[in-house]
Length: 431
Ligand code: IMP
Image 1 (spheres, rainbow, N blue to C red):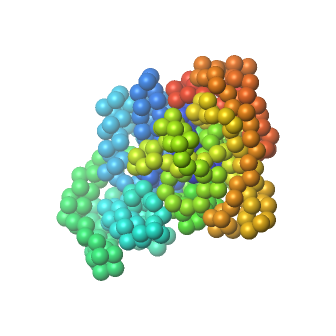
Image 2 (tube, protein in one colour):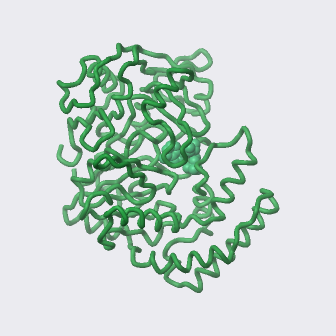
Image 3 (cartoon, rainbow, N blue to C red):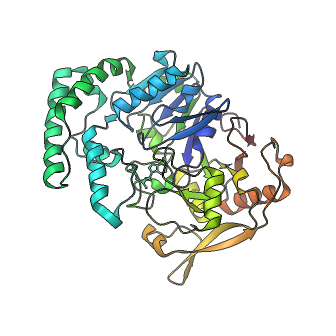
């Protein structure tokens, strides 16, 4: 298939960055279609760690085009900072290879201030957002008061609308949230400078991608966050503010569903979550602490320690349905080395009733008790394995069992952080 989408099947942080980076080698264009810099895709290239928040992972491959689609919310200053960092490291050398949709919405400092002030006031009810203003920016988009990058075409009109928004948001910040207002003049000055640098990148993402696909080129849609953080299909209200599932790739760039996607779901061999909200297969204590250390399970965007749990097959089956998964990449299996037994959550009990499929109301997950199946662990490191046969036998059994319970073929197996530490059984671009 020439069009491939990569999506998270859990609560984000599944290791999408590494798989996207690997598939980017086979793609002509890599596209972000939702979310903002609340996402952070970590990639290790030649032993160096890069964290990409807004720029698609294609940027780490010379000659690949990168597109940030209309479905995203983009902090312009953060984007320019990321572009500068990439350039300093020798990437994104050809500016025409990076494109940003005219219709993407800007995240402004007042969105960040509102996000943080609300979270601070919410106390125990806080969502645990990344604090990057994502929710308030999407609110403005839906309320039709957001600022899109197309506004930059007319500086005078843009500044007028920006000042109007700042004054409204400052009134809200002061009187409702009892928070410090943002500084209008500083924001206007920063945006005037940013405007000149941003204008050359602007494009019509839908028109560009339609032409690209029609020309037979390969496009990789890089999903951010995860299915369980999807605004409609996740554990609402403990979710992010965008649709993170595969179908969002269409509206998030402006192409239609007749362009069929091979959807690769990324699942960690265990589960993690940052922020508040239900997590049925969560466990705490020494085992969780050592797995967190071993897996480096600290938020790439915020540094927060991630909550830890076993692989949840109920959730994976649900993700398979809502995303229409073609295959699964099971990542970070090396992190489970030395654990015995390894558990798979195969169902939930809620108020005495067993659920093998995701309960219709996600609120029921708050009191769901996991039902586990136990598998023997392995002690041998799989880090050098590059074929199925080279995997420890118990690990192979685990992989087979996960594929069987979830009902989706396992297409890739992650055995380490490096670019080459993945066993590829099926490549969605060539299968
Ligand atoms: P927001 O997206 O900053 O509004 O945060 C809403 C929820 O989504 C919080 O629980 C965040 O921790 C979570 N979240 C947002 N983006 C990511 C991500 O890329 N990985 C993991 N969690 C995320």
